[in-house]
Amino acid sequence: MAVKFCTAVAAIYGRVKLDVAIANVLSSIQKASDAVFLFGLLPLCISVRLRPNTEKREQEGRRETMSGSGKVVCVTGASGYIASWLVKLLLQRGYTVRATVRDLTDPKKTKHLRALEGANERLHLFKANLLEEGSFASVIEGCEGVFHTASPFYMHAADPQTELIDPAVKGTLNVLSSCVKTPSVRRVVVTSSMATVYYNGRPRTPNVIVDETWFSSVEFCKQEKLWYQLSKILAEEAAWKFSKDNSIDMVTIHPAFVIGPLLQPTLNASAAVFLKLINGSSTYPNASYGLVNVKDVAMAHILAFEVPSASGRYCLVESVAHYSDIVKILHEQYPALKLPEMCADDKPLVPIYHVSREKAKSLGIDYILLETSIMEIVKSLKEKGFVSF
Image (cartoon, rainbow, N blue to C red; front, side):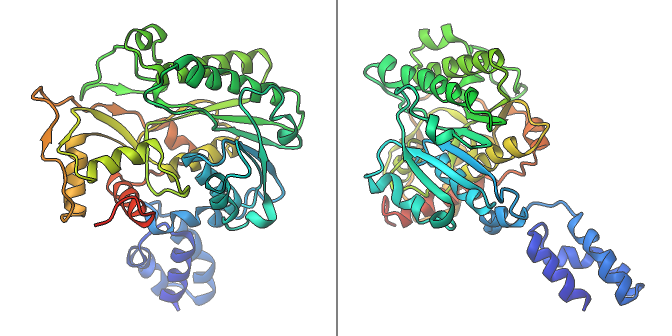
C-alpha cells in the first residue's frame, strides 16, 4: 500500500524519482496507521524539490491544476519558436488564447498551432501587423494578459532600420497602445533578449556574474553594427518608458540563445546554428553563449504573468558554454555525427562567464539541463527532416 500510494503521488507531481520518494517516507510509514499514513504521506512526497523528469515537462501545465481556466490571454507572433511553445503551455493550463500571426492562409504559420491539444476549443487565430496602428486592438479586447513575442530576428539585415528596428520598436508601442486602452488587461509580458543585457563592452570572464542590472549600450551596438541587438535595446527602452508613463504593469523576459524541440515546421535562427554544426561544418566558431531551453522560456512568460510579485526584468540562462563544449556534448550524445574538430581561429578560446539565476528562480523556474536541451534540438531537427543520420 505504501509503495503504491507514493508511486502514484510521485508520478502525478513528476518531482522525484520513485525510489527516492519511497526511501524518504518508508521509515515513517512503518510506524503509522493506514489512516494517518494516507493524510501524512502526501505532503511528505510533494515537499521534496528535486529536478522534474524532463520527459514530463510538457505535462507541466496539467500538473498546475488548470490555473488558466476561464482566463483569456493574447499572444502576438504566435507562429514563432518561443511563442508556439507559449501557446502550447497556455492551452495545457486551461487558458483561452487569442493569438496573432502575419498570414492566416499560410499553413506553416498556423497548422502546428491548430494541432495543439485544446486548440479546437480555446485557440483563436487572428491576422495582425506590427506596423499597422490598431492592428491588435480587437484581439486584445477582453484579455487579462498580453504576451508580446512578435519581433523580427535577423542577424544580417540589408536595411536594419526597416527590417529590424521599426518593426521591433513601433510594433511594441502599437501593442502597448492597445493594452492601455483595454481595461481588462492587468499585465503585459514582453519577450526581450539577453541582447539588451550584455552588449556594452564590459568584460565577460569566469569571475563575472551578469544579472538584471546590466544594460546593453546603444552606442556600442551601433559602433559594432549589432543591428538585431540594437533593435531589441530600443524596443525595451521604448516599452519601459511607455509602460511607466501609462501605468502599465509590465514584465520583460530576457532569454539567451534558445534551444530545444521545435513545434513549428520551419527552421528558426538558433536551430539553424545547430543544423550547420552537425551538418558537415569543418570548424566551430570561437565564441561563448548563454543557452536556455525553449520550454523554460515559455514557462517563464506564463509565471511572469501568474506570479503576483513578478516585476521588472528576468534573465534566462541555464548555462554559458563555448562552442567547443557544445561540440563535445554532441559527440558524446551522437558519436556517429561528423562534427567540426577545430576552432575557426587560432586565438585563445573566448572565456565563459556566469549569469545570475536568482531572479528566475524566484519565479519558480527549474532549468532543463543543457545536455538535455542539446539532445532535444538535434532529435527535433532529425524528426522534422532537416538532417538525417
